[in-house]
Length: 237
Image (spheres, rainbow, N blue to C red):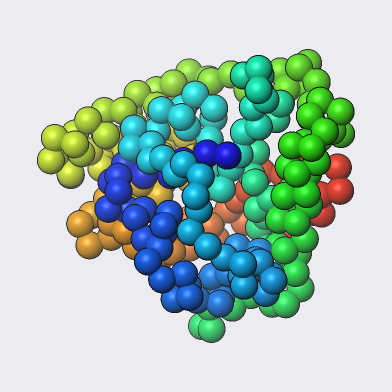
């Protein structure tokens, strides 16, 4: 297992989230939003597997990762078994009460069920390999994978230019190109997140500011996380 953070600001943006110095300090409400039950919270520990940082969004571009958390299953032969999909995440977080920062019990339970189904499916694949019902045939993988459109390619180019300018210390110019990447591909919440979170005072903070919630509310009935086509997976919301 390899985890990859998609953060243009690099280590400063993710250090306390990848390997936090104090796991106990994580708010209970955040655990509920993530779909973690009490038993899982009690077993929480800093990961020992590789945790990489994709500052240039190269992996996101190659595998079409538009949000977090997302996962790609790749077998020992280097063959994609399941293309990019939300890793058990759903839209129940959209029922968050902004005054108390809590979600209704039924929404939290739905999040836990979705996480559980996804992790169980992953374990089944690890144990059974190609015999797992969750391992997709090559033709099904090809059916689910979307090639980039012209607008997607232009969005990626704008993002690359924004990253180059950011690394050169030209923040405002960088943000203009990141904003254009968002305009060209609004479904990429990774583009949006980095556009919002590059200001010095925002680096390392949780992406939960007014811009984020306004954008989520603007979705209306549309999905934040794409539905996961997996046996046994409950609805996203």
